[in-house]
Image (cartoon, one colour):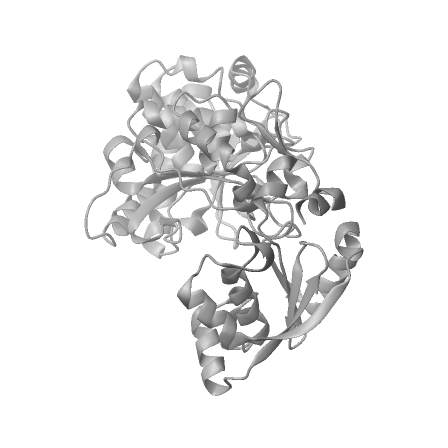
Length: 461
C-alpha cells in the first residue's frame, strides 16, 4: 500500500462500476454536484489526464479515457489487465463486480492505511467521487457549509467505519443521516420513499483543515461554499453533543429485509442511537438510557401526521383493522379555536381522556393549515408554507372558518378534512405506548416496538 494506491482505492470504492467486460471498468464522477461552468469542465478533464490517468498507469498499468454525457456525470474508463486490481480488491474483502460502493466493506482495508497521509489520500478518493458540495447540503443555513458523503445501499458498517476513519484524522463528522425510515420519515408510516441513502456530513471548515481533494473542481467548490459563511466552525466530538430527541412514528420498513440483521427490526430514537447499537465507543449511552425511560413519550405506533387527499386518507383508515373498527363522530372545529390554544400552549393535548393523552395541538394546526391552504400559493407539495401564517390569514378573512374533524371512539388517529384534502393525526398516549417496547436480548440498546392492539387502548381508557 502507498498513498497513490490508497487514493485510487478510494476512487474505485466511491465510484467504481464493473460490468461484464474482463478488461474494462469505469468510475462515475457526479460532476453535476460540483458545478457546471466551462472552466470547471476543463479542470476536470485536465485532472483526469494529468493526475488520475498517470496514477492508474503507474499503479495498475491501466490506460484511461473519459466521457462527459449529457446527464452531467463524468465516466472515467480504465482498460487493461484487471487481475492485479481484482487481487487487491479480493485481499481487502471488496467486491469486484457491480456498483462497488453499494456493497463495500472497508474493515479489512483500514489496517493497511498505516499513517495519516494514506488515510487522507483514501478519503480524498472518496471525496472526489461521493463527496457532494451542493450548497443544499448544509447545516440548517448557509452559515454552516458541509461536504456530504453520499452513500447508497444498506451497508451500515461501511458508514460506521468511514466515520471512524474521518475521526482518526481530525475530520469529526457533524451529522450522519442513516438510510432508515426512522431518519427519513419520522412522522408518516405510510410514506414509502424512505430509501434515500446515507449522508455523512463534515463541516467544510473541518474538512479544509484535515481533508483533501485531488480534483481542482472540488477544491474550488469548497472555497466558494466557505465564502458563504461569516465565520469558521468546528465540529464537537460526539461525547459533547446534545441529544435532542423528538417523537417518531413506528414505520413498517423497520423490518425491511434489506437492512442488516443488527439493525433490522429495531426502532431508533436518534441518529446516535444507531451508533450505540453498532457498538461505537463514542455513542451517548448514558443519555440514551435516560431516553429509554421516557420512550413511551418518544414513539408513536400511529402516524404522527399523514397528509394526502381525503380519499387516500379514508382508504388508509379502512386498511388498518384497528382504525377501521372505530366509530367516528364528525364535528366542525373552529380554526380560530385551534390557533388560540396553540398560541397559549403549543404543547397542549386536545380531545383526550387526560392531560397526558390526546392529540397535539401543533399537529392539529398543521393539518388544518394543509386542508385549507391555497394549493398554488401556500403549499409546496403537501407542506404548508408557514402553517401558523396560513391559519392567521384565513381566519382573519373568515373568523368563523371551520374544518371537519372525525374523532374515533378510542384513542386512535383522528381525521381533519376540508377541500378534498385530509390528514391523519395520531394521539400521544405514553402510558399505553411504553408497554409496546422491549429490548433485544443480545443488544440492550436495540429497541423493538410491537404492534398496538385494541386491548392496549382499552386498558388506558
